[in-house]
Length: 443
Image 1 (spheres, one colour):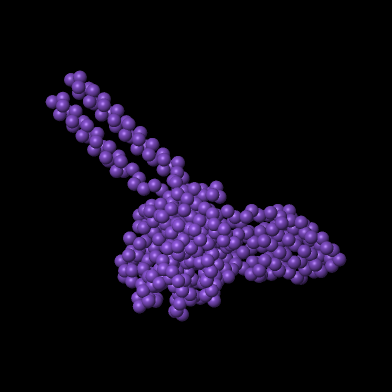
Image 2: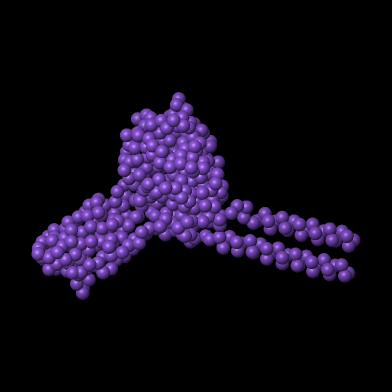
């Protein structure tokens, strides 16, 4: 009888142990092992649920993140301000999901269907239609990017880059090209997984090697300063390539990083190995008084500034700057004074009163229509006399601001604490079973 009781107790203990381990997280969160060389903290913005081998990433003109799921054969929409995930589209013809994603300014989403060798278009209302057919070319489309009225497609099967609707832009001469992005000047950059190369292609189709030595590069993205970020699917590393072609490690510790996209000063990574999307903060240059300069003139002032490296919100459309010169009084600000609007980083404001003190305010309106005051500067004195050559002195600045609110960071310590809870529960159960066993043995 005692032997049977012992067997029953240990059987129950084993079953409870299996239950505990079964409830434990089966995969590590993306930020539990990821490290950034700039010292920033990675943040997981979404994991699991509607994400199933996430691959391509793209931001809509409204600032929402869209993710293509390979095994889920769907596109997931993520509202970063609330953290809500929803299925935007599903059931694509190839039944293997889309790969590359790209938006046009009207909000239409384009996706490359690797299995059917087609480019699919999804309207704002979620209506699916075929946009381009490359079955005769056998190109196996992968990366997509949209720039200044043109959709570009990288062909994994034949190594070509297509200007969709106009034919081949350039033949790279090697297969297995995957990621594709563009800079503000219209140059294209693409990754070649077979030889570890990143190519640069001009708008005229001239090809050159931009960087080499990156193992199995897949995703690629670019920031406003011209730095490229490339994901290595096998090594779990995100490489950074400067505008001069220098390669270094930006992040490591991912499982299988695929698609990349830069948005509002952050690099977003689709990690297909952990079914998660991670946000990696990029370093921004800090503002100082030297970032805004005011040169007085006769009834005018020339204002110039160094823009903070805030990424355009979508499609790399250059931002528009508005400069307001405001008369300051103890009753507050007087708005409606002289101003100028420009897409460059300097302008001259006329119609000023000589000898009057002004405040200078520079605001940026980005591609999605959001206005941000990233320079709000007090300039004193501003003497508009024609004979003066005094350069205004900046007395205060404010750093770049953003209106986005993201979910709270999920750090590695939180994931480790969950294991401590399981361990504590396990020890308590073991102690309970031991006490029960001891009392029955004494009987």
